[in-house]
Length: 113
Image 1 (tube, rainbow, N blue to C red):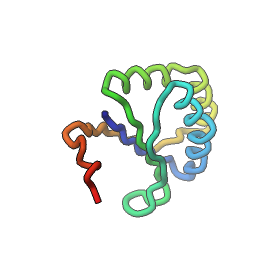
Image 2: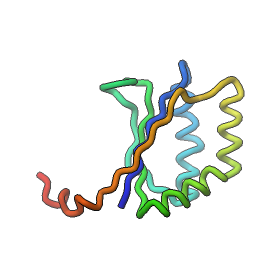
Image 3: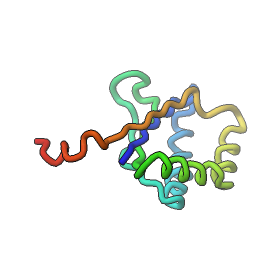
Image 4: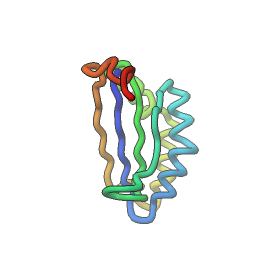
């Protein structure tokens, strides 16, 4: 199992626009494309507190990650929604992502206190 952590730093004054896009468009498209989100939230302590959307996706492997993101990004509903929300400028100042492999730690959480 692998997990993809994605961090979205909105452009100045665009945090609520990012949240609205995420809840009204992105989450339904994740469901449509069989993508599993395991966590979503806003950074409250640390860099970019209260101005950063962070979420985690779970995939069986890199091939599944690439396939599902490919279909998501090719979906005309996604392209249309993003374009309409960026008519007055970009939504994002920065987007960061990382992929975490849990395989070396299988079973560890079964015994955690």
